[in-house]
Image (cartoon, rainbow, N blue to C red; front, side, top):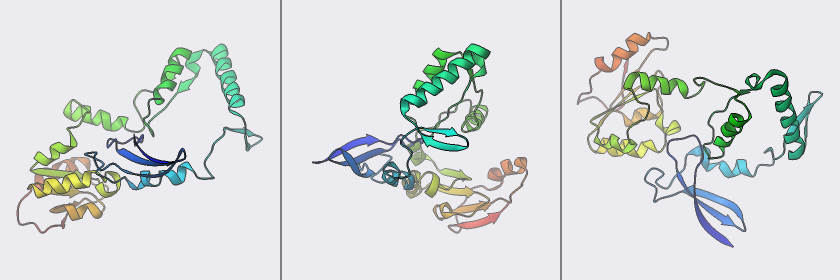
Length: 241
């Protein structure tokens, strides 16, 4: 029996794509982007397009591994959970719960991620991180610069006259942003790319400003003001700064 089911991508990505999965006899055999989703627009990123090859790979870990004498051997889930419980409770008993450091980040953003937070909250209180080695630095910068880390709706770009892409290759890191940028450009928006590396995103832009690596940050911040958008610039034109 073959059926189509709609689901969502659980990757740590703001696109939150809608996926149409083909299910045959209880197994997903194909995934594609949902044409009705305003961001997905019927296509998935390269990474998610290859999800099934990872899901069903023979090299995928499907059982816990226990390291013994420098080698890993598969063990049952019961044995692995018993070992983890014994180590956690013994540390808490001998040194207190603060001796346990709980760290987690994104990767996938399913609801089950919050269960680990709840578990260690009830088990502890344990030591947790302050700040982040991942997106935390960006969150802090957003709050410092703008007072808020949430961004505008991506479709608000369609109302922009000028769009500045700084160090961003949208074809690889934000492929679903490409159609939005093209629509904005069709409405008259002018796009400028600032990046030390020349990449495919430059073909979308009226101007590409290539910064020299190691440039002082104070000078980098002056670049947008020193490069006003104007008509008559050759598409894909390059200036060095």
